[in-house]
Image (tube, rainbow, N blue to C red; front, side, top):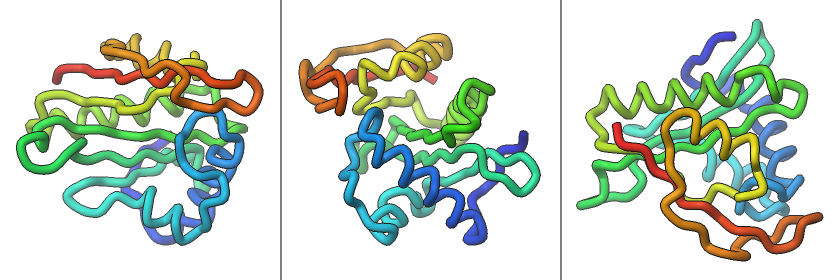
Length: 161
């Protein structure tokens, strides 16, 4: 598996992953009815941020976007988001994407990385982020309406770099 910068040729596969993840309504706070154009605007991070793909040959296994969490006085803290294709989950793709984002943020002098809305029932992601040094700073109870579990919390997670 290789992680590389997103190219326009990757978009059809990235859109497939984004559409699948968002429409499942289990892990992202994005509108499940978002259009392809809305997805492009949301997912493709403009410079100086970055969008990457994890590939195996010509198959996109997952994607990540990263950049500053806020502008101005908050610009020293980074953020990132990750999506992995259903058929590639459990193979370390998410971990590789997160490690890449952390390395990118560290190389650019960010002081930390903050995840604003990690669905508490997304146990695989929470476990991965904890393993990579993130802490849950707080949880907004019932802030995410999961399709089968009902209202579950959203974690704010952080790791110093």
